[in-house]
Image (cartoon, rainbow, N blue to C red; front, side):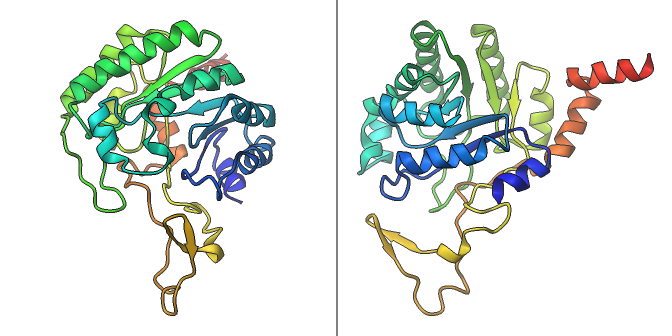
Length: 283
């Protein structure tokens, strides 16, 4: 239902995101979701817990072409502080995930750092080193990068380190100059005015109309709401159903729809397909 809704809104590329829960989200479930999304979208990517090569291969064979796996922080101390338990605590397993994805056959691999957890200057240098390495060893895949800045999120966590808009723009420009063949992703975490200014500075992919809670586009899945305590599903108590709602992963800033964002791109002359069509009509 969610996929059909997004396709009806004009989207042709979709990213399937899941929490890192091995029982709720096994690789067989991820592969089935991909198989059901492929007939609706020409391009399907996943952002899930790190998998092994053979597990990634199952997802590729199901039709996924893209893998997104952000390290979040390259600062080992900050990473350990943010991930106190569970499989996500394994820093090196996550770091090596993109290479396993390349070995499995993903055509596009996305990496990134979550700005706000540690010194962003050191984080960006580490990200640049990681991208340089991936471009050498994962040469069959296109490498994309993202520099999402922390926004208010579930649990009330606040950024520990701030990065100004000016420094953010300088970072985007620096990565475009350093890696001319890499894709640069700009999410709806950033405000509309800033995203408009960055459109012509090397950004290659922008999200739009994003919802960051499960079932956020259509409300589907609310019949299975429950709490999870230490990996166990706990049924909602009497009276909780009225207050129950899936929680946003984080707040977005740019709330424009895909149609509105597309119009802005065309107005700025940044849509080559639209320009070719316009020239054809004029001729």
